[in-house]
Amino acid sequence: MDVTPVAHKQCCPLCQTDEFVIRKGINTPRLVRHLPAFGKKIVLVVPTIRMYCSSCGAGFVWAYDFVGAKRRYSHLFREWSAEQAFGSTAKHTARS
Ligand SMILES: [Zn+2]
View 1 (cartoon, rainbow, N blue to C red):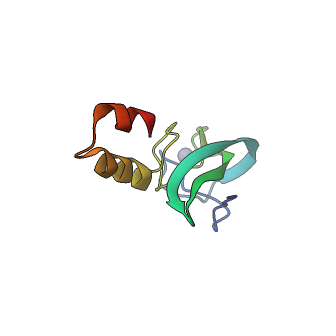
View 2 (view 1 turned 135 degrees about the vertical axis):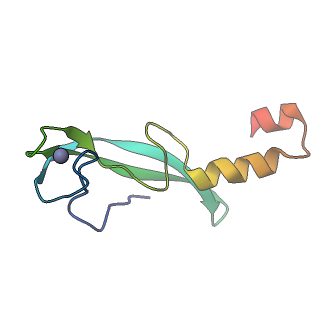
């Protein structure tokens, strides 16, 4: 599933404002595993949006609340997979 942020800009992590932030293009999208739906695996195709703050000179990429930086699994998927592993064997958990 392709996803995209609804806002155009995100606040600079140093200045905490988006007043001087400009978009600098989009890198290769990230693939983030999310909770299964309709009996299928769900992989979110998340754009990696580069931004630049002209006030402090910081370059950064869009930070998403549902997934940690450089993580390939969403927070919900991590919680769900930990719950699935509870009470099952190590072999089954490793396979899933
Ligand atoms: Zn800044």
